[in-house]
View 1 (cartoon, rainbow, N blue to C red):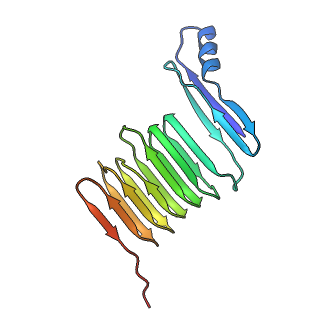
View 2 (tube, rainbow, N blue to C red):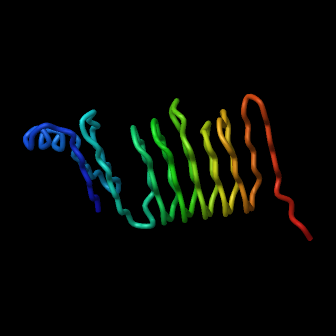
View 3 (cartoon, rainbow, N blue to C red):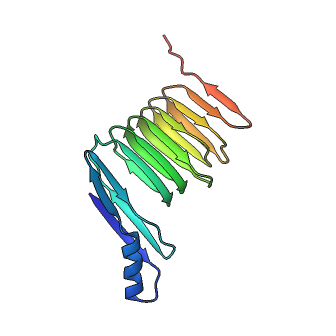
Length: 167
């Protein structure tokens, strides 16, 4: 299910309709894969709410805007050019790639490994897997309750924390 909330900055109803038509979400189904695509507009804003089955493998290529995902059962792969990413209650691997902009990542209650590149602020908690980061971290880092190893690698620091079993 795809729900759209559109905002247009226009001088008339007909101009607003043209903006909405240009950025409307389009669905393409190919076998088990569903592609949701929207073109951007400098004079409008489109917020999409996409509901998928818990078993769906989700890949997102976001151009502009923040992204929030929750309740996924087989992981997520995100490429975000401009915007923050907020994840919660994810089962499966999490892969995050940011573009050249300043991005924040927060992920909570992930039952799987988290891999990411550079970001601004990084907030991770309740991660039942490993954390691997490579690239610059320009902001604050908050990590708590991780069951696997943590490896943060920047041009200044290489931090590796291995989780050891206690007998």
